[in-house]
Image (cartoon, rainbow, N blue to C red):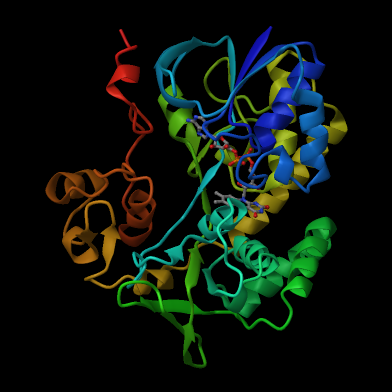
Length: 413
Ligand SMILES: Cc1cc2nc3c(=O)[nH]c(=O)nc-3n(C[C@H](O)[C@H](O)[C@H](O)COP(=O)(O)OP(=O)(O)OC[C@H]3O[C@@H](n4cnc5c(N)ncnc54)[C@H](O)[C@@H]3O)c2cc1C
């Protein structure tokens, strides 16, 4: 039997390993040049997580593995057929059984100055550093909401940056409830959080804080933040502003999979609503690397007609419990809308401001009138911001889900 897996992050690698071990042919497709996804960036040579190394050892030279890196799936053309583009052009790929492990995207919210050079997402700065960008001696402020702030600050610190402050939007009561939740049900995660805080000791951690603005003039120089006690200003070269993650459901939507709560709906065996399509990892809900690993494994087993063990199902339940705790603890508060002022650009590709969007009744109407979401990113950044700011339903996914060449699209009959 043959499995096609989209995404070679933790979920995709775990699915590939389980599929190969069970005797399947596996085709692993990813648009990055190296496997590893978001958390294990930089490819095998850069990995420090033993789980990544162990999986890769089992997978990399396997005779039944076909690996396509730098290959993006840009569409689902017909049942059982995907359009893939790589450096040689477009190809139609037929699949019998497909596991979608397409991960998540960072949620970026607009505030005055967020388009200045030097301002990135939290995961964005981390990715740049893991990609080799030098930050030694540079001043960094990390702001927004969610555990990724700590991970980014730790990565930047380890790379020699000076972290001026970590500004977390959630207040102390919610953060404490999160901490209690970890202590009660997820001691391993608590240990991780404690060790991150230990690595970051001495750095100001401002709870209930909010970005007021990033200041230039031409590139970032300072960031102003407000806490319940004061308005503070920090000089900085980089502002990493992240407001959590959102599942990447584009491919799932194109395939016709049901979406629930912004994620691809999957049952406890990772089956989607579409026959012969499974989904695993962050595209089915935000929950971190452990959730991605177990879901990827279960998806491959089920796709091959094998049952997961009771222990595997129990690990999955535990990961979903953590996922729910995360969602409760770091749900974006409406007060974050105050960061965006009328003159703030929301769609940076097409320079559309909040005041130009405000009068419209929904995404489609605004798109027709203002060109919001019609630029190079195709709304991948601003649609999440608009959903949050204006309570609009975001755009559905359309072919191609990523910019594609006319040559590749000409493969569609
Ligand atoms: C920017 C960012 C930074 C993060 N940093 C951390 C961190 O430091 N620590 C942490 O615990 N968690 C981090 N996370 C969360 C992280 O996503 C998960 O912990 C873990 O990587 C999820 O694994 P996954 O396999 O579900 O998805 P991912 O690791 O995201 O892997 C998905 C893969 O699918 C590929 N893909 C998606 N669509 C297509 C397509 N159409 N065609 C081809 N390939 C495709 C992607 O390029 C990617 O390589 C980060 C997330 C983001 C978005």
